[in-house]
Length: 472
Image (cartoon, rainbow, N blue to C red; front, side, top):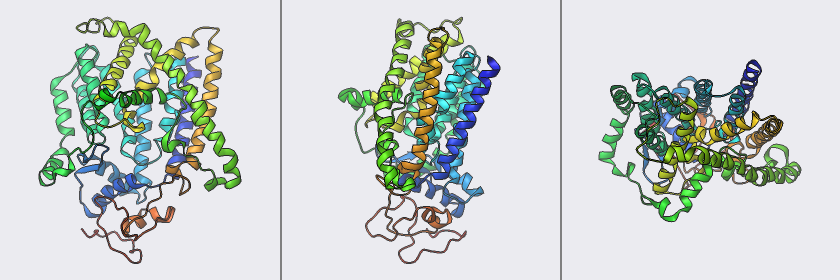
């Protein structure tokens, strides 16, 4: 059974690599992508390192210049707008491989297969694996968090603490949702789920925070870079809806319920208007109706986890995890405390939680369902139903992913709710990276948008691509 399970795991892994590769090949460029590409472009061509990231939902910009480096490195090898997404692709693969290796001793063979299916072939993970965006890097940091926490459940380790702190510091410079992991680490430490090697923790945190030094100097000259402009602390607790919305996303990640741009299907660009009239309602039915029903399954898994183990985890706040507790018991507690951290962060958030703002906890969203279905599969009467459900999930997630690749805005040029941008100028970057050649954009349109750090070259004919420095 173990060898057969391993074949299924690696078969699912190969299928996920192919589907993600299709998405990478078909990705499109919107405003967020242009802002990121501009940072990488300036570092590669001009040697100019932008010390801050993209604008954030709460105002200001993400701190640190890590995103500039992440985008620039692939551009050194391949001058194409799709190149940086190959690093996102790699991060996703490393995240799964790390989680699979970490959880393999805890899982039964069937649970390992379930995890490969529900995590690696999740439509949510697949969708965010194929285009350039800050949150899309975060799956790897969530995996490192779990792996280094489990490695230190009984004994602190210099390198595990080093990596744990470095992951938090780097995630902080990529997206503000790093707080989900940071608060979870504090709760896990206080409850005895995580030992800390303080020299390793400090060394990793300090080294990974070095890119913040240029950012701090730039903030002194331009405080608007770091100034939040929206919302207030505790908004989620006051209005309740933002808190509930964030928790709902943790349920939806483990389901087929997709929304936002993930659900804007327009088949006419790929197959023509006649096919669109037939297929668009079917994809809407799958994503909204069938997907909405599937949210009840992870909800039941979380209810089971909290009902059976929540009272043991939460009662007597001073009680720490017993030293003789099994790794499986540790994992259940990790999920409960990570979920508690999510509720705290969602409640304190100054803005309403959006679909991408909890991707750091994607593994946390999926694991309760894996544990529950694994338990059901050990019952002779329930096991066939679990197998049939897995087969149905596999077919529907492949269908959804093909819909993403050929019909949703981040993966098609134009169409309904497309990533259509009109730019007020032109720039060599748009041509050297094959952006306008792949999907033409209206250029030299006065009063329209422009990437926040990219110098403008004025109006007129498209400038010739070149490798010399861009005018500042």
